[in-house]
Length: 322
Image 1: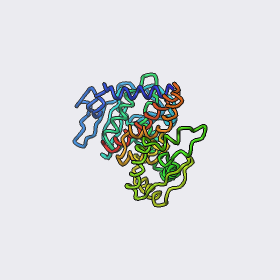
Image 2 (image 1 turned 45 degrees about the vertical axis):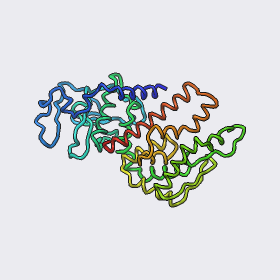
Image 3 (image 1 turned 90 degrees about the vertical axis):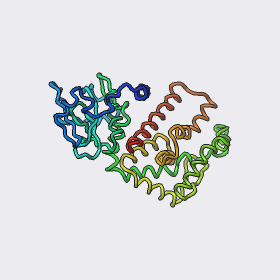
Image 4 (image 1 turned 45 degrees about the horizontal axis):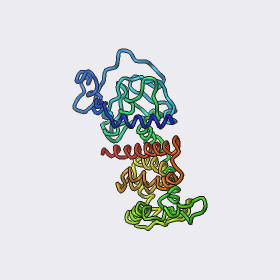
């Protein structure tokens, strides 16, 4: 619950703003302005002077800082050791990096955190800037964690990631229809066969048919079935053509949504985030309408879903520089 509260606080802070200084480069954010550039030339390189005193820890050296592996588990990884979080061009001019004071940020595997767009680098810098002095809390940094996933996990497990997504595809929630009602599921079949449900789900099924050239099979079991080989291969081809950052985003959305079709519809800009969340929650919202909302349960689930889906969508769009 504390994790979700922290996420919601972070999202409110993003919306509220108040850290406009972060939206520049390291030189723009440093107090010395041009002097802090140290004679940076037209190549866009930025050189920030080293502070007079810098505490030494095992994850930092003179030019870079890397997070411990525990960063990816969500544990608090130590007190804040930097003053400013800024962005700059990568040394090779290809991509952007985040600077914590004068040090370049690296992933837990000590790889350079090279990001595809300035917009994504700025957003991750904002996550670092909003960390409190008493501790760095990874669970309030979803974009940073997704970036580490895209840089470290996806490149070495890409085939496995795609294979797992394709296994989920055959059990996608948009392909499911409730069978006839029983005493325990009274009303579910009526809800899933209602005009309201079909009005929301059927357009997505039509989109799948139009987008991939195959009509999806609809099941009457939540255990799923098997889609046509042509549709399966068409979806798999789309996944294989994605970048590592795009695949990391799709994988995160699929895990939260229990669906691959919904993330692909967002990826192809067919669905907005609000529409996607509504589709994901159709069945559970029906149960809440019937039995009531459990405070500290359903409301937390809703908040968590919004954070997980929204952060993955933001990551995807910022990756594209949108």
